[in-house]
Length: 333
Image (cartoon, rainbow, N blue to C red):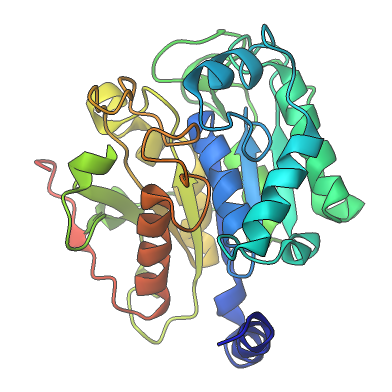
């Protein structure tokens, strides 16, 4: 199928099944970089992205030192949007990412905390500039850069003091429901949230036909599934939320899944929230359980051929085809 035929096919699907368009992603830190590169690579399928403390596409250029010194700090110089654009054009031409013109129809939410000393604000500034150059409309791009939060996910009432620079569980009480604000921008307007139901948290297999540990992935991820989204006939939306480094189950337990604020909005708005899970892998050079945004799984990590990218795309595909069976979380996984 040619690219033009694919676009026609997807357009017809959106007319017949409006929910097909409603897959959005978000993430914090490494999860933010990963959510952004997933959005770029699969822009025909993902309609929006929320990026908290993240930067532009291919910022690390496949090098962990560049990741540390250009994409978090600026000891090696700040990232250039021109480099992101050039790489994206290369990958578009070789078919490893979707057509970049799709991004102009996206909604994007970007947050950079004024107290963040881990990923400096210039990264988010360059990211916002990049999306503008890709044609994202002003009303569809929200850039929150005034909140005095450290390197953490800001919540209404859970976590560390808001200005805490960086400490477990990397979730901070900022009296702001950022999960709700982000979801409202990406898929809203939302109905008023309801109390989340912890019994609606399920697990799902993250890899099919391979050992996920070799990709620095856990065997299972988690999902919040409202009752209304259980049946195959349900017309629900999907949001995929990526944790940051040192926010794995081994590091912070279920805090990212249960306490970032997504689930209460999911409950009242027919949204399934997926929480994929990375794990530490010292052999791959990923000792903090980060998502791959610098190339520890290979040089094509930021494209559709990236192993972790393929895994997430496969999970989304299974959800869309109603073949993703959730097994109730039992606490011993």
